Amino acid sequence: MAKVVDAARITAPDGAVWRACATCGRLAALTPDIDQCAGCTTKTRADSARLLPVGGFGETDLDDIYEAGCTFAAALHEISHHHIGDPGTWDLWGTGPDELARLHAALDQMTSAIKSSRALLTSVEHRVRRGGAR
Image 1: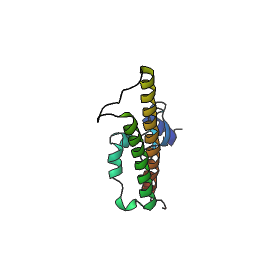
Image 2: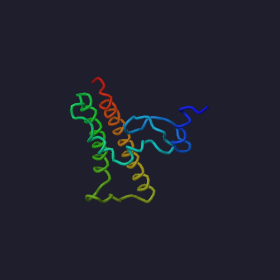
Image 3: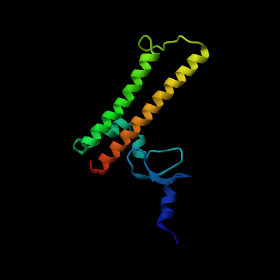
Image 4: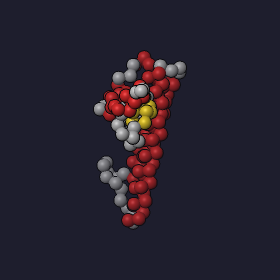
């Protein structure tokens, strides 16, 4: 006898597992290489954020947004101060290996800042969507 779960398998892509969308938190059948539901992949994160209710943001949310922005801004400032000469140009002054290492380090620093900032923003978005306590 057919079960409800069998119908769900028919509509899900091969290899999909039911898990929460990384953007909106909704349960969706996602393949291992996908982390967003179909509704979220058609718009940017900024578009999704603009749809959140203004009144849903509390003091904690605004503090976390500020912290995420400061984390990103600090990395930009540090990299700009130490590695950028004229606006839009890399300050190339070392040997090939030194420059390669310096650029890798700057990219790693920016990647870390982006990851930290996005984690804070994601927690804010989840709280606002849930209407959670502040």
